[in-house]
Amino acid sequence: MPHVTETPIPGLLLLELPVHGDNRGWFKENWQREKMIAAGLPDFGPVQHNISFNGAIGTTRGIHAEPWDKLVSVATGRIFGAWVDLRAGATFGTVFTAELDAARAIYIPRGVGNAYQTLEPDTAYSYLVNEHWSSSASYTFLNLADESIAVDWPIPLQDAELSDKDRSHPRLTAVAPLAPRRTLVLGAAGQLGTALRETIPTAEFATRDHIDLSDSGCFDHIHWPDYDVVINAAAYTAVDAAETAQGRAAAWAINVTATAALARIATEHRLTLIHISSDYVFDGTTAPHPETEPASPLNVYGQTKAAADAIVSTVPRHYIVRTSWIIGEGANFVRTMASLAERGSSPSVVNDQVGRLTFASDLAAGIRHLIATRAAFGTYNVTNAGQPQSWAAIAQRIFELTGHDAARVTGVESAEYFATAQGAPRPLNSVLDLTKIEATGFRARDADVALREYLGRGGVRD
Image (tube, rainbow, N blue to C red; front, side, top):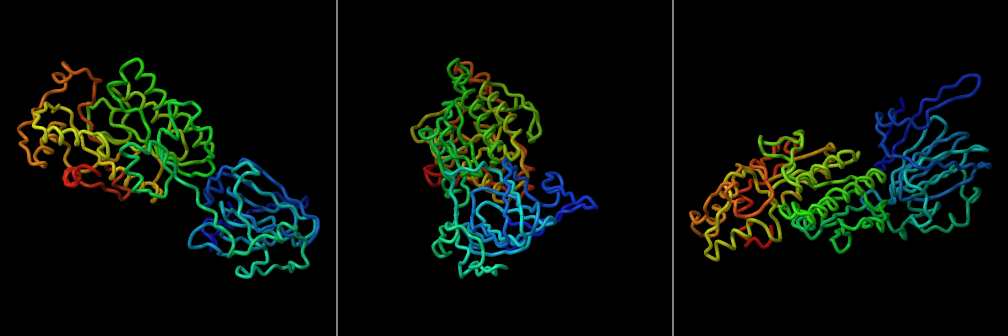
């Protein structure tokens, strides 16, 4: 079993590899995924294998930081290695040096500069990388003789073999740190997307004008190696319209076909895919719904969300965030009821559909929590906490909190309500079990507390 040692540079890992030798020579497992992951190496998914041969002692290459991860090991000979953190952050400029031979390798994360000097003739070292080499990729370079890092090269640089290009690289003070991979949010104009702008302000946000999921080629122009997290907050959510021929086709195209394409991309590029699911994947006959409950959708919208969940669950790095009854910036139930209350209307609201409101800011905070804590991948229910209520009870509470008579809201059963208003069948019980997300240390606000705060601000922002 290989042994992994951490270094002063975060993510830079030194590996001691078992080498088996006899009178014929030696053998080692240069890359053995199962053993190396168990030892603590990331599952970095190499796609290209390169070999560098150096005939003379003192051949020196670097310092280069590439936009991918790699594993470097020696096939023949011996090398001195120097690594410098060239990523933006507190450890920028941190240096680590070590000798590598057949029994020692190094794992180098994206953005860490690396340089090698051969200590024996006819030295060859190999490296596995997890992106295909591209001349258009963004590289960062540092001068081998930079005084601030002061690498003690075994063979002085004036006596070493260097390329003219390596001699001319900039000093550390002139190096632009390599920016980290970004988070991409799809559906940035929606209620959740708007909340994510405040919760994860460093993310990149794409509205339908930028990435239209109904377009089969909508992802073709994106350079995916620039990202490490994609939050799919875009969806076709017109539940009743999805029952029509045109709506059904649109719902499947956006919620399923586009999600399937995104899942393939996430798998290929080792992205963390965060997908927003719905209580509508259940028929509502039993509750609360745990994450493990089999899907049983009642309507077309629910069918498309259940299909998307099944697809996303195949992505190695995924979070399916299942939620219900979202309230954020834009048109929503709370704003509608508050408007009716102000206008003197006395609405009839269904009283046999029970669940919890989910305020978009709390849902966004839950997503940020999963990313920040690196919670185990999988499905998580995220709604506001508190006592489940019917839509009618919530409407009455909205009337009360806005200074109006709650008795103006009349409760009606779904069967009676939809006898005169055409609509898709909906689950009667949408309560989601929050045990799993709470076990990670996240607990959203009580739904009634969040409702009071929302209305207290006029419902303009959540």
